[in-house]
Length: 247
Image (tube, one colour):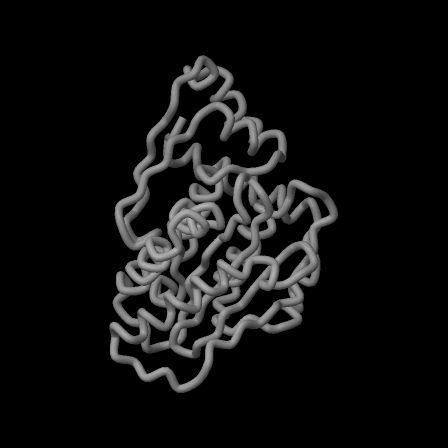
């Protein structure tokens, strides 16, 4: 982190310049780019609330370092948080539902168990939760680093359910049962800024453990997250940004 901080301090980013970075198409199932600016770097260095650009860049890091070129690409898929969130659902739920269906259709095989990760924001820079969807078994896992369940976001649940049903209909899959939502007893944050870090860490651990089935009581290896767990992620992302020569 110190090395990257020095690079940023000496770059034109400190004077208002930006960086446009193109992601691998495999990350979100289509072409995607992000704009990185000074404030994004400051969020990382100061352990502040993370914006979508940083969240997506860490997702790109996970794809490149944990998944690309392996069978994990057939087991785990990411959905761009910028396309599906509470604000967009309120404005146009049908469009959001169709975007979800299009993401599902982009995968080669949805007949074997796999997970679609949706980092979901409650709107206007609010709280983040993770929604992980298994389309073949009709299971949706809900991971929230604060207390509560999906009932806090009824429009999100309605949109996700509708997208899964429409996708299965387009694929001519028989809906053998209702969609089951599972609230996972995941690690809990103890402040007001760490929800984004926790959502990213949830995805990282699930992929690293190569687990499609998320235990209701979460994984024995990770019953809680310390600050060291989150600092590890920041160091990983800083090194990735250096290696990709983004700055």
